[in-house]
Image (cartoon, rainbow, N blue to C red; front, side, top):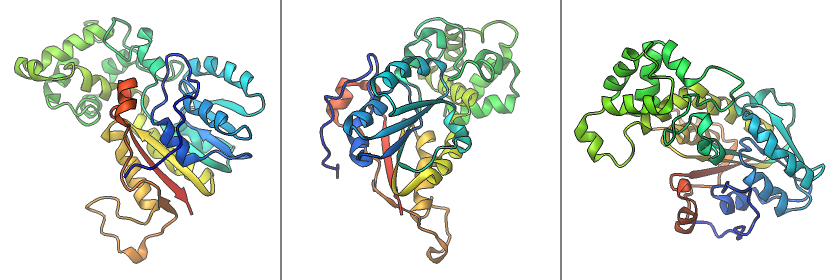
Length: 318
């Protein structure tokens, strides 16, 4: 059953950015005067702004590893003086952040609209650009370099496990064979190479571009996205005050799985079908606020099609 939550649809948004499941997130966090909140994925600042606007006494600390997020944060800091701070840091390193004692913490995984819509970032193959895909262009190596130098096992994990590509053997072989040719250096040549590796019949029947899954897997591998989630969730829970709320929005099963398993563990429940730990040995340190993940209502999906695959889970610290 969907919760009856207040309507925050009228909150002012950052141009070009529509925060996902905003009404539901604010319903769980319920910002109060004097409350401190942590937005681990600042992005376009939509969730942060809404938390600040929901109660004039609330404060937000936000994280983002994308240097362009800092540019967007300047105006928000000026608009809410003394109430908002942005930390230039990957949420995967949340454990090294000294701030704690938060009333609520939010994760909104995946790409922001700004990253996806900027052709120079190399996340999309809709336009031709260098195949970069890094959320922080200052760290690591571009996807083009990663594809040229990663071991075959690493490429297999990216395409098969993180991209969930059915024809992963063909795609991996095409990538390995293309090394040194320049085809891995740009988004459109990489997308064409991956597409050509997919059997023609499956290309014709696919509802998405044949390169979509491989691009997803490569991006996740380049940014260590799943590892960051697995490190960040325990660090976030430690920083919550008692009765504090932890929310996580995911966009595909690879992001949702570690959230679901960690939340179930905190709630004293079996993490999966293979978890046979006796109930008397389980430790319950949180209560579930979502028995099943909440998904966007039809109206939100109509306004923002990118929200259609979003899932929100929330727990409260005991």
